[in-house]
Image 1: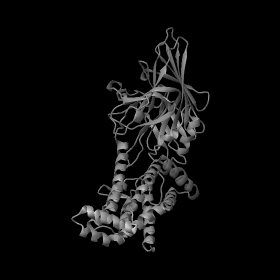
Image 2: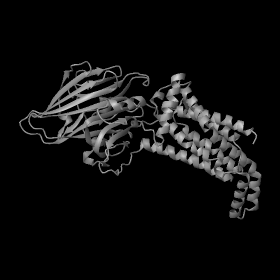
Image 3: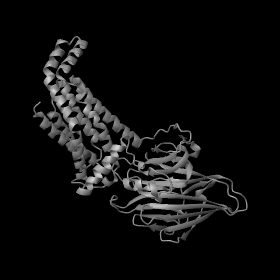
Length: 536
């Protein structure tokens, strides 16, 4: 029946609308936190009194220049008075097109990676450190004192060959009285937003790996919210990141709690976190040592995959890249489709085109079946209209006669729209792959300045002009003109609403994704032309 095809296309459009609405909600709204089934880990909203946003700023930094250690990958600056990591700058690399600062004292104020939040009732801001030159070129040590009893020492050692920093933090009881067991809270901190256009709002996310009651590591994600959230349990590592960069922290000691932070004075999207580590009582002369590894670098698949053997604890760091429901397909597209072809052609734009052709060839039988079903439906239109006219007052009889007609000619009403629905997982996986591939960040192609952003070439009265999305919309109109006509005139007009809907949906999407869809349209139009003149 002709209306089945129309309903199928409308449902497909609705699925796309719901998908993009969900993606927007995921990026811009706070994530609801529910209690997992495993009793070992619990989540809840933090009380107002425990809000991380209530913490005071660090205060005055040392007037003297910071201590700096660096390698060929990044530079880390430390305040000599605070003993804190106050600035991280990533150098240019194969995937980082220009130097990028992931955190600085100007942007974070107090949510700095590895800064001590508190030790029991003693606040980290009360500490005053003295800096010491390390024994090696990439090592710095700082020492401070809490009262007359607890000496605090921090040692940072930057790896010579990657984005890792090994950290050692010791608490030594130099007093004459036992220091009771208490919690040590360390900042995972926050990360700077990307300097992106308004078409792509900055997105931060928090990924946490914890051990469930069966001893297996599970992944949980948090998005920015308007209140703090708590996660209690055996936390092996946590990572706060924006779309393309991340700070990931793991330690030999599992954290007992993670608390997310928010900043009322900041726009939606701000996110930070604090990790809590239980410290046993310290008798006079006893020392507690916390050891951890901090990764501060790009969300590059290969580097995150390698962290499983490089970090002090934990696994599955590659899941920091959120590839969604169809992660297996998205991973294949990103690793073996996009990057593998790039090795041979040297252009990610051309790689996307080649990947589009490969996907089109794989889906050729499905799209052929869909087109031939529509072609057969077009031939049945005169008989369908005759049945509709003859039984216009008897819908049940009309339906029975049409089903007999379909059976007579071997036509499946779902043959046209089902192949389109089967393509949906591929599209969603491709969206995730292209949206999260740092290789596309600031990568140009033809007139496109950045394949991870819309291809803006100007604006008219403040409205951005994205030619690739406009061309895609016009291509959809042309594709509709070539598609076999079905239904009455009013139903055919409704089909032309779809190009408008898709143009709106794609207008602010990454140009790499729009490039895929546009090339796919051109290939579909060529296939349709071929099948239109093919003999039955």
